[in-house]
Length: 54
Image (cartoon, rainbow, N blue to C red):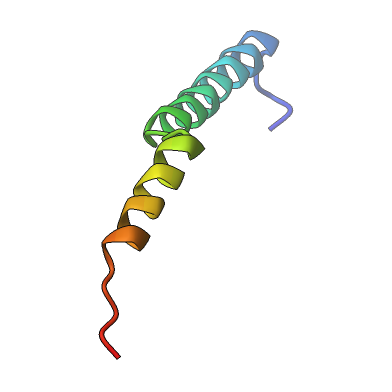
């Protein structure tokens, strides 16, 4: 659309850039990361609690 004024291009760019950044920020913070040491400790406890009766 070459008939649009340059200020319109600037506002469109800023709007899409803002939406893109908000989408990325929301996707980054939506997951709660757990430390690997906690997962390892839980895994060890679950292995110790398993009693195999052959």
